[in-house]
Image (cartoon, rainbow, N blue to C red; front, side):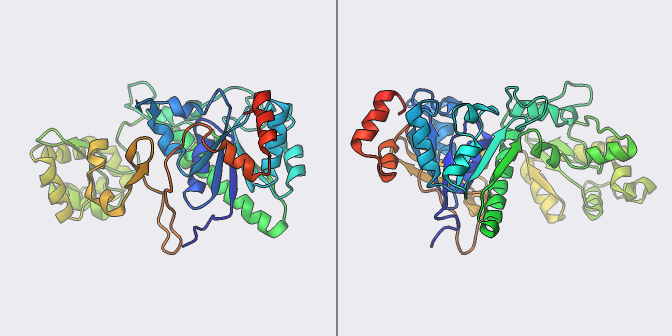
Length: 395
């Protein structure tokens, strides 16, 4: 079966992490992604986190389904070659500071002149304009600026940042969506365009109604730990055998089932139990009842009884649990990928399932510059031209 993005060519010029992950998501569904890295300064994700036999494992995930080549865009030969590549591409994804591509003679004017149908996705911390545009930035700053950190953590504890690339990942999903939206527009107009994506914005959107609450009511959401201002009981609870489970009662019927299960049907008759917001104001009472019952049962017993009662519960799992979870196994959420460097690898599968044209992981991240010669030869460069680029330091 032909993947839905087969025939789409994407040049991934970006690093760490939103831009490259967006390119990965496109590659998972058939796009030909060419990862362009600096000859002596590869994408830093190759060196982030643990490695095996000197091979970065994060890169194996982030670099999957990508061909890899080297090119120094700041050199004349690199600039010329990139323009030749852009003329064959549908999408370029970059995350240099605003003005960097223009400094190299590779801005939108030059790229669109080489290929009027090109979509240029520019992924930066703060966007292409505004007072912060030229500041260095990472997803951590977006997590702080957006309001995420301010509402995360215990009430009397410091604001909490996530220990993973949350803002970058949300921005990557948004970038892939933005690129496909721009390509749909190109199908109607015949012309490409620029996608300007600021990492500080998508996370602000997924935080929900906070701006409109403040605008209309002056309401500022505060840190509540695992509790919610909108419903209760909602928390993590420790089981008799030292495990943890998470309980949610966003639906009124589920809240009633939970209280019956834990032996406190009496609270259902309380006037304040009728709405999630009122229940949240009585979270101490509800947590004591639910937490006390859970503390007397093992995690397996809690999960079994909650399922029997049709109440919402999940185990708090670490990665060891995830790797053996039967639901993830049924979905093949963690799949096996063969790799010539490291053998069999297990990693997250493609993001969703399509019934007719599914995505697939064709290969894991390849070595730095592994496909340079092949990509340039396919572009029509002769061995002499490739040697000249290498002599110039452009490869």
